[in-house]
View 1 (cartoon, rainbow, N blue to C red):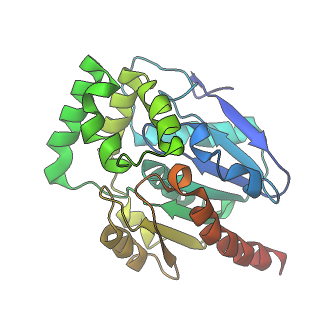
View 2 (cartoon, rainbow, N blue to C red):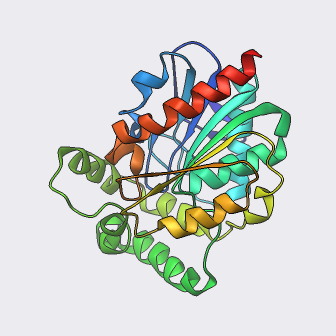
Length: 260
């Protein structure tokens, strides 16, 4: 689908209210394979590859978080999907979900934020720029110890092996630009203004966004729900059953409110 000057790969499955899945840096729409079959039983599920990732276009120009949100906004409009939307965002995808909800509060019915990247410690900015530079120059394998191995430590699982294969196949330039886009993350100031139901999930083994950071974000969102799962950073791919156990009751409550 051609939107906002870029071609985005997407998939639509199921029937019902629209649920949008926004993947993490290094991820793709396949990141959600383990949860989509159940979610599609009661939602019209949209998942897509962000610009520079997966099967979407890899433009050779820098882009920031604002552009990624504009891409999603344009994709929803081009597909003529009916609002309000339920959003599930992982890591930096969670920041995009928050930004879209702040931009279109009447069109977002709920947010589920998984190990959300909602701010960046200035002390880490230099490391992130170095990670982007090295990836662009040498490829994904050169920075695995700084990226995937921290986000999802080797565990011998088939799920991780599949994810690692997709991760290494990322376009180095696009991956580098997504990492630089993360430097734009500063959405904590938007959290207090969110008016829809919000679920925050923290991975108890997440070394990238440890639970204390997620708890701090939850304190900034009035009425939010905080849960923890036995997982590292990429919960949807690593622990889909655990994620569904938390999404199911959250969406039960949200859909019940919608029917009132």
